[in-house]
Length: 271
Image 1 (cartoon, rainbow, N blue to C red):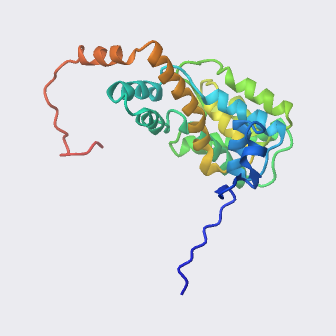
Image 2 (cartoon, helix red, strand yellow):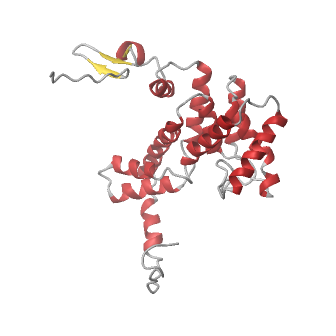
Image 3 (spheres, helix red, strand yellow):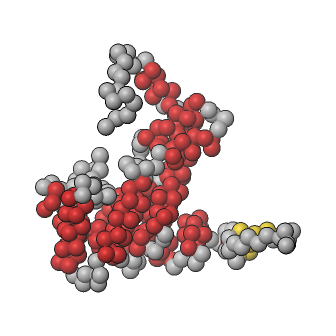
């Protein structure tokens, strides 16, 4: 029995004389020739994207890069304050906070839309059809006690400015597909079920756009994290110039209030 092992990859490989990436010579055909957004798309799909796809993809990355002092940004700054010798730790701390409330909505929305489309049969051919499909989806989700991913924002109560812009870019590039169509319809019909109007948020529209690009649903959150990595580097760079993490720490440390212990009634778990 041979001890030789075979580990096939279409990604990076090195020889003594050269490095190849995606079948291209890294030094001659990639470096200085391929933008980072294009390369990220190419690495994930193993096909070189069209210019319109790059534009939509990079618009998504820009939309998700930074959104101010969110928990992911704050924890990155605080971790750097605690361990300035570990930039990777500070970045990792921020990325680990990408979940159901921040960044993870991109994946959640893409999956939700995909599941609705997979179960609907022939796709609608007009806005009335999309609205009917969206209304059924919202009603079913609410009846099951779930939230609609991509609806609502803690700051942008009326319109998330990223949303109409990404709709427009996708339409300009001919990449306004079924996921975006369904998401737009949800924006039109949800007040009939919820009794109030909520904005379609940027994380949700990014998930719809990425799904329309045919990117793997399992990686949608990864692309949001890719974008936020750039934002967190920016947060660290600003922390070096204008530090605020120490003030955030002291604000909590000097203003905490001691209260009596409150043992859990069931002996260890919350109901």
